[in-house]
Amino acid sequence: MRYLIPILLLVLASTSYADAQLRRAVRDTLTPEQLERLEHSDSPNTFISYNNIYRLSKENKSDSVAMYLQYVNPYQLMREGYNKANLDEYLFGLPVKDELKQAYRKRFTEAYDNKNETFLMFEGMFNEDQEVRKMLEMAGDMSVYKRMNTKMRLTDSIHFETLYNYTQEHGWPSIEDGGLYAEMIAIHDHARHGKYFMMIKERLLEGQAYMQTYTLIRHWLATPSHESLKQWLDTVPKMTFKGDFLLQGIYAPHNISEMMAFAEAHCPVKYFVTIECNDPKVAEEVSAKFKLSTGKDRKKILSRFYQILLPACKEALGGCGADCWSIHFFYNDSTEPKVKLHIVPEQMIRG
Image (tube, rainbow, N blue to C red; front, side, top):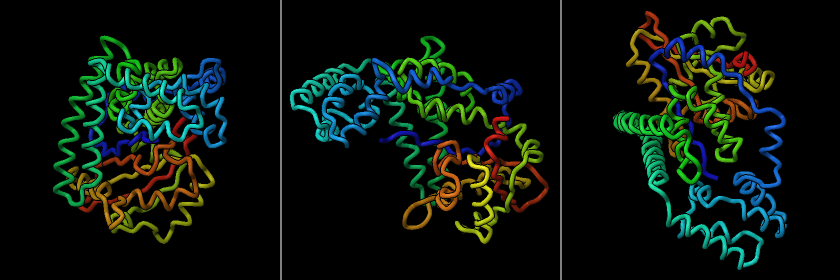
C-alpha cells in the first residue's frame, strides 16, 4: 500500500510562543472506546474494510471479502493509486464472484468519471507534491538538490495556503472532496499541525481519514518546538553521540552496539540530529548531504544508518520510517560544523 512519505526537516527558524505552548500541550489520544469503534463496527469504514479484504483474501474467505467490498470507498482506491486502467489488478486477486467484481468496477468507474472540482484540486496538489519530492529524493548532486528543494518550497507554500483557506471556509474535506489527498499536504505543513489536528481526529472517528495521518501529526506535535529544543536536550535523560561518522558517509560507526543497546532498552525512542556551527548556510549544506541519495542503491546516509538501528527499536520515529528524521541547527562559535545524534526515550517527549 502506497502511503506516507514523511518530510525531513532542517529547522532554521523558531516557532511562535503560542505554537510552542500548543505543541507542549498536545496530549490528545483516542480512548479505548473510540479505538474499538474504529476497529470493529456493524458498518465498517472504508479503511477497516480495505485492510480486512487484504487479510481475508489470503485466507480465501470469499463471503467475508464480498461483504467488506461493499464498504470500500472507490475514492480511497484512487488514493491508493488505482484508476480505470489498473483497477483489475486489485479486483483480480479477490476471491469473489465475477458479477460482484463487475458491479464494483461499475461503481468505481462512475465515481472516477464524476470527480468534483474540489477532489481534482487536492488530487492535483498531491500529485505535484509527490512528483517534486520524488525528484528531490533522487537528486544525485548538490546543485540538483538545491534546485529541487527551492521548487518544493514554492509548491508547498501554494499548497499550504490553498488547503488552509479551504478549511477555514469549509472545514476538513470529505473523502469525496479529496480529503485523503489533503492529508499529505497537512502532514508537510508543520506550522499548521495544531490547526489541523482536531479536524483530522474528527474525520478519523467518522471513518473519513487515515489513522496514519492522525498518528504522524500527533507525533510531530508532541515533539518539542525548535525554540525550546536545545534547552530541553541539555536536560532530558538521553544518550548523545558524536555524528562525525555521518559526515564521512559511515553507516555503522565503531560504537553502533552502544547506540543499539540504548535504543533497545528504552524503545520506543526518537532520534534528533543537531548541527552546530556559526553559519546556517553551512548547516544547510550538511543537512542536504544527509538527504542526498548515495551509492548505487540510491539510499541516503541517514536511511542507511536507520536501517542498521532498526532491529534495536522498530517503533523508533513514531512509525515515520527511515525518512522521518528531525535535523536542527544551533548556533555556536565554531566554523566547523559539529554533528550530534541524540537518542531520546519517547516517554520523555510525551512528558
